[in-house]
Image (cartoon, rainbow, N blue to C red; front, side):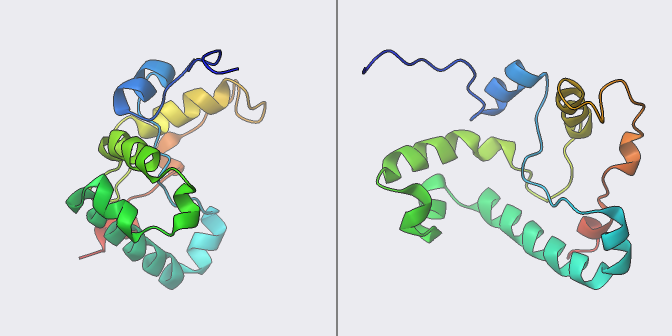
Length: 138
């Protein structure tokens, strides 16, 4: 029935995400196995270049301008809601593609709360991500 649902956690904004998780969660990332990265450096660099260009585009454009580039299937029948949600989340994207400060710690905290392969384990965060390929993008 209309009016019976309510938002419990709103992570569309930096403030809402920080409140819910204790920090920003770097959802816009490239995830790859270290072994694959080591064996496919050229491909990783190309993917990273595309990712950085995308982050720069997002930084330089409004939610409305970004929505104009998206296919209709992406936002369905409610383009206005998509633009509004996108606009609220724009501050959460990095402008350069680098892992944001505190991001790895937030991801570890979230994963450790439910994933038995992570919970209670020592994780060397500096081994779980790299800005190496981002730094090579001009």
